[in-house]
Length: 150
Image 1 (cartoon, rainbow, N blue to C red):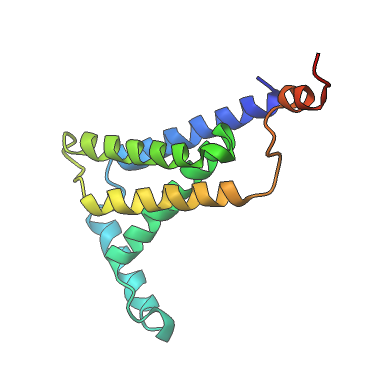
Image 2: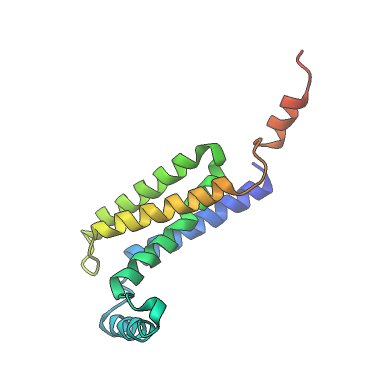
């Protein structure tokens, strides 16, 4: 494994740990935090373009944004041709999180999170699949393709 792939694997592992801490750790928006978020959303809703903004929409968008890097990182690890596998990893991860949350007293599983997280993973995987780069795999594979048959 090259140094770049090791770094990518380490970054992916660290990001997955962060997602785990955010989704399975103590509820980040307790009463005070939820009230603060509601006040911020209410203030933003005063702008014409954001008039329909509400707390559930912000939470949905935050989940999409949190899972987009999951899709992107797994496309980078698995390759662009396996973008669908990165989406599947995101879906399996979110199902595991929602399943675990039902056993945690401070957490509440929400089916909307499945949709938001899956959408985020799909958007991230799509972005990763569209990024121009080495489509040919590892240097060893590219060298094998260039060498004449024996």
